[in-house]
Image 1 (tube, rainbow, N blue to C red):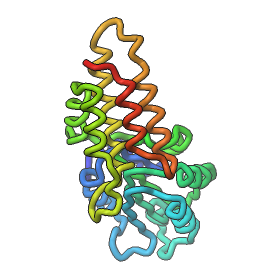
Image 2: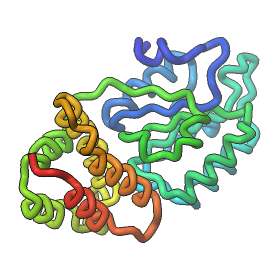
Image 3: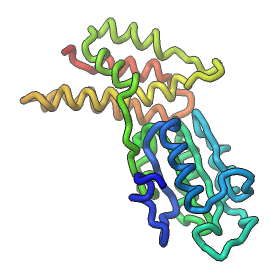
Length: 242
């Protein structure tokens, strides 16, 4: 049984919803193993649903809400197992989908147990985050972190060129993360790298604009129809040159 999940999961009185910040590739195998050791069947189980999305949309949220409201097919004397188990792994969330989830968790269904896996919990509304038991899975340095470290060393012109090269939409290419998702992951890494760069120095209180621009860009990424490229260009223009 994964020591990480054993630490955060109360088998006697589990929380109704868990938010796990981490990569799908790292979190899911451990979570699957953990659930199976709890006696939860993850294959051939009509009460178990595992869904993977790049961008989580309103129809996806409605389908999940409908699934959670259904009665279990296999009642069990153990109340821990007598539940609908929903696991959603998503890279990005549109705001209207989040609002649907928020309504769903205002009065959580005691008949369901929900796990949400996402690489960046900051893409979720704070009000939605508050409905979850939230944990961060140990993670290794990613390519986004390396890109962010290089990005802050560039001139403004170089940053704009980098954005044009790397965040033009690839949504139609099979197997590719959407530009919206990649922008969110990059912003998360950029915020972390900037925080280390700026606040390790003294007298940097005036350099708050880059963070404000990152927060604004992250908020607008939740809106369908916004341009990740334009949002990142706004971030690039707000940053000082180091």
